[in-house]
Length: 190
Ligand SMILES: CC(C)(C)[C@H](NC(=O)Nc1cc(F)cc(F)c1)C(=O)N(CC(=O)NO)CC1CCCC1
Ligand SMILES: [Zn+2]
Image 1: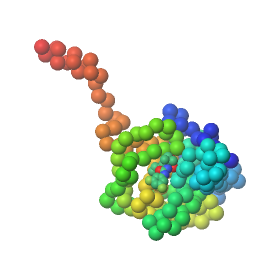
Image 2: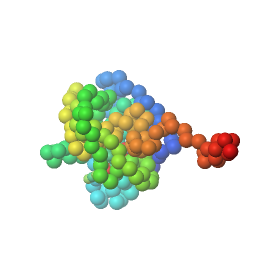
Image 3: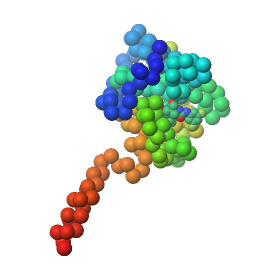
Image 4: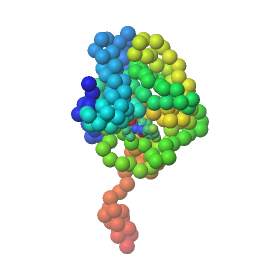
């Protein structure tokens, strides 16, 4: 079974790679891994099992988080009608989304991040996702609310994106001058 020891943490290079498409039908090895990812979520959401094995209760898990750089995600949460969504998916793709955005009030966390990171993470309010299920069926999901956020968070992992990359003010490309350098510039102009 997957435990927290199998979940890699920020700083591990695999979390920053673009995961490879899974060529379908999936191999037995890939099926086994995806099944175990779904099982992690089930175990982690069972209080007794989570307690026994020290599992963080997860609502979603992406294969790169267990150091498997393949486009596979597992999700176990409830949709806006409070229906259970428990899925293992190959090659999930957001095929369309709302213009409106939403965010989790208290910000987001991550099974691969052992610290609190403040800030709102903007997500599309509604998304349409196409994927292939563990059982091999192609499906289309229309998601909103928390479930839409979970899917966006997991699909980001397949593209090497961490939730905090999306918190405004953290422009990963903007290099600010170290304070000393900035002081030096103003000295030069006297
Ligand atoms: C990292 C952790 C905090 C365990 C997070 N769980 C979570 O957000 N649970 C939750 C939140 C609610 F708002 C209401 C509720 F009922 C339960 C989670 O599983 N993930 C999965 C993950 O790290 N996948 O890579 C992070 C979530 C942040 C937003 C979506 C997924
Ligand atoms: Zn995560």
